Image (cartoon, rainbow, N blue to C red):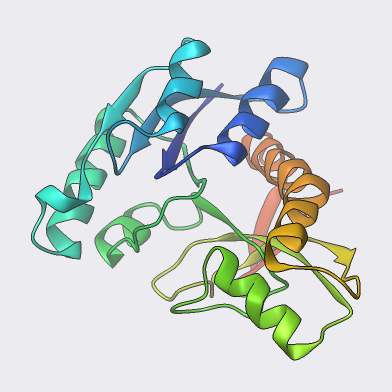
Length: 208
């Protein structure tokens, strides 16, 4: 049984999707053993506590730079014996000391179809604002491994929704979360925990 550590910064809707998936048996071969937040008092911590999941708070604001903060996160991951790290609305870019130590063991969800609308500065509603500004007809979410570059790791799963004429960023965000993120993130976690993802030439493939 693999130890899944979830990193959060806010409300924790993707965390809730993972908790629900674990409870219903969708996630096989893994268990959420700790939730680590970059901020105190966020609702994600309450979600974890309600479900009996241990929590830790490592406040970003208490560290002078990304390197020192990432080192603290790395120490915590090692202490928690992490097999898989899931970034679920975690709003801090981690230094390569973490991404290299946990290469192909950190999963993130990005609310667009990478390589569109991704990279530095593309997060939250900004992603959906740009997608609507561009006039795309479909959008979605990408589950990918995390490496040293923002949103550039190997793609595990992608899913789409139609973009409708009167969509606002908030409406599109909700449609993507409900129809793609909350389904594919648990699926990717389960695939990882069952050793069903293989990496070939830097690309991720699902084993039959």
